Image (cartoon, rainbow, N blue to C red; front, side):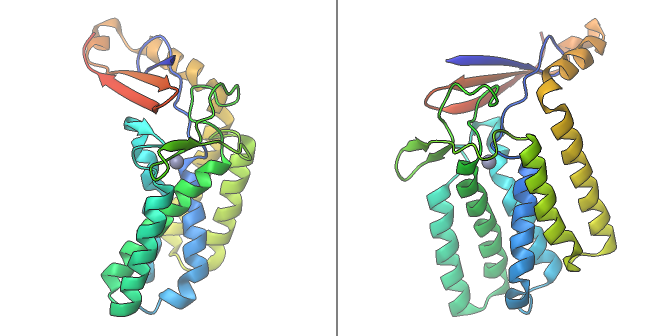
Length: 238
Ligand SMILES: [Zn+2]
């Protein structure tokens, strides 16, 4: 077991690794949705469809708070469910089913494409595990292909920008949404610049927290295991 102590407000912080940035997945899903929009856009509002794609694309990484790239990553499950939902939509033409199909399809795309990234571990640029994405159907981890070595790697940011460059100028989104999306791209750039120094940055921030306040600042501990991916444990009061 490799243990990474991760702290908000204490000695050190090691950000949990994601194969690719959640934002890269969000923009990937958004770009895919923009491409299929001419076919699907007649059935339901464009904004709702794109929002479903973006949220569905981000959602699996919410398992950072559980067993990362296992608890909410279902490469097979989401793909099968998306196919079933698509069948249901073709039979019923229900807008609600279509929105659900897009969201689950985006989550499937996320889970499958995480295999192309790095491993779920403390320093994926110095990999010690072969845990890419967990396959619940096979009951084992897929080996990471490492085309994108870790979340926030320069190549990750490039992929993120490429998908954003497809999604944003397509004209499917309003000026306000475009501005928000560009803001997210800028945030992704900043994250990529700081990625390997997050530990040091968080440690510095932690030292700025007054001693009296440390009791109320949560302690977050990340544990990496060979079999179970990453778990994050948050505690209050020290
Ligand atoms: Zn993921």
